[in-house]
Image (cartoon, rainbow, N blue to C red; front, side):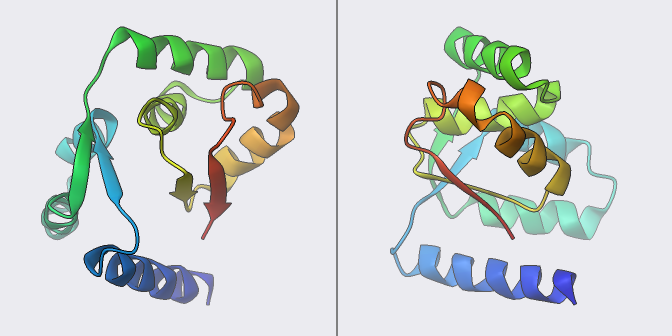
Length: 125
């Protein structure tokens, strides 16, 4: 049931993006993860989603520093920290994920991370 609701939420979100209500940002870490995707149909679907993005966050030293700070202050895993640091660096207002463990880690350490994720709202689908 949860997967069905997550899928419906994603469909609605993409419709809002296509209608210009929200902007989607792509990052190098998304590109990297998708390049390692062994499911061709999913991989192609993600590539098509990337065409909806208005901005692409490229790797840089600032993102690495933010990610290191996130890991240090929350014990978040490296790749997850890169996702979040890319969103922070890109000035994103929202960070949406279906990764329960990641969200729980961030929430548990919210006070430690408040200087890093000042304007970023996050939600779990």
